[in-house]
Length: 88
Image (cartoon, rainbow, N blue to C red; front, side, top):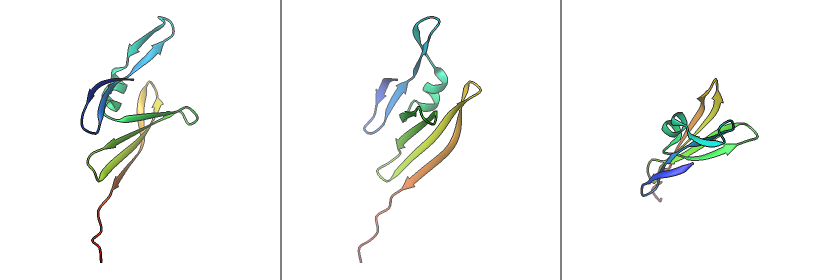
């Protein structure tokens, strides 16, 4: 994972996977395009990828993916919206 751009809150990333036969890292366009704007956690135990992103101060989203048939499969999306409650 290499940072390719930064904003005030979120960053952009390119993802490279190790190719054992060539002993080199190769850019993975699918992961870079799908996950590029998110903070990513790789969960080896579940073999899942969990992303996190902030859309604003009050709206955050997480997505959970798995690898399936050479691609990424979205398993779930969760959006949290925080709103201020007026004091009584």
